[in-house]
Amino acid sequence: MKILSIPFAFALLAVFVAAPVAAQPATETLDRIVAVVDEDVVLQSELDSQVNSVTTQYASNPAQLPPRDVLERQLLSRLIMQKLQIARAASSGVKVSDADVDQAMSQIAGQNRMDVGQLRTAIEGQGIDFNRFREDVAQQVVVQRLRQGIAQSRVQVSDAEIDSLIRNGKLNAGQIHLGYILVGLPDGATPEQVDEAHAKATEAKQQIDGGMDFTAAAIRYSNAENALQGGDLGWRDRNELPPPLVEAADGLAEGGVSAPIRGPNGFHLIKLIGKREGGGEQLVTEYKARHILTKINELNSDEKAHAKIEALRARIVGGEDFAAVAREGSDDDTTAALGGDLGWFAVDAYGQGVAEAVRALSPGETSPPFRTNVGWHIIKLDEVRNTDKSGDMAREEARNILFQRKAEDEYESFLRQMRSEAYVEVRLPGGETPEPAATP
Image 1 (cartoon, one colour):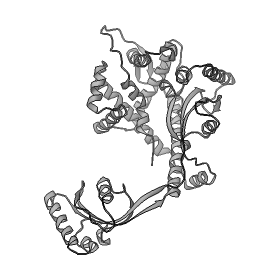
Image 2: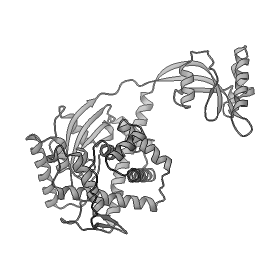
Image 3: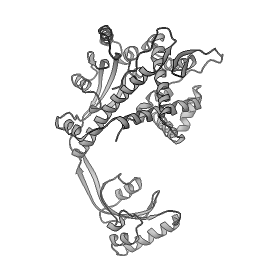
């Protein structure tokens, strides 16, 4: 089941790494509390660090940023929600290991076309403490795990829902690349708040029509989580997005921007950046094969397992039936009685070792011995076929789409409930921070 992709979770961090960040001044200043969040606090130094990072990223075009007080409130809102989520994750028993953080760091490095060593050099070269950066990444992983846990515990997708989505022709093939602006509304918004939000969305559209770059407008007007990334949603499957946004995108030419669209959480503006077509047959290459395994364990060393598989292969090459040798000599309890029969399978069904072996074979051939984490194997390829899996893939796609939509709705509801139940005291001029906005 596909849940929430980690690359999106680290999008901000990836941009943060790619842009040079000014080193903090050497003079020590007296810190102060800018927000109280339940039993935690947000310090001025934390907020200043976030503001400095963003303003440095846009140093070449500062006009794209909103006024500093607006930017501070946006970033403070993000910090407040981050602290609430981290606290909830801790109370729910969510933990991440060093290996999890290492994997995330590798992913961030890859997004920036670096290895981890180069990433560290780049971070430290910008005056950033690498250990603090790693701690920030760890918090991102914790939040991602929290999101996944909420989705898995609250979201269910029935076969009837899948059937309905497919039967009604609402499973749209292809992808779209959108820019996105959300002028958010709180729960239970008053008519005055609705009018104010609509006026703000209309002003954003007028500014864009008058020549303002959409990215600049997103930074200035949007309440969405990706506002500071210029509202770029990247490429998304059409079915992952709310239907009203897809319908609006279908009415736009590339580069076009919609009028304000009313949604349950505010007014939306979208820009169609690009489209990719999809659909048609989904041909999958499948393999029918038999295998023999000699396990490596405390009673059977690597050398003994290797010698045994070589001896079994020699018997097969010498003319003995593969199935008979598998029944006698294979250590795979699942397939030995079946003569090693694996049935029909997709190339990646049994891991990289098996995939590489079957790709190198023609029907009737037996592979040389190869090693995996469980032992030594040989494979005999019987047949290869291309199968149209469009029906199966459509159902799986529909399941993932419905799950993703529900998961985002549930997490948005969870965030709002958590925010409403929390004690938050904001000590910045301008009063309370806005409620967290949903990301489509």
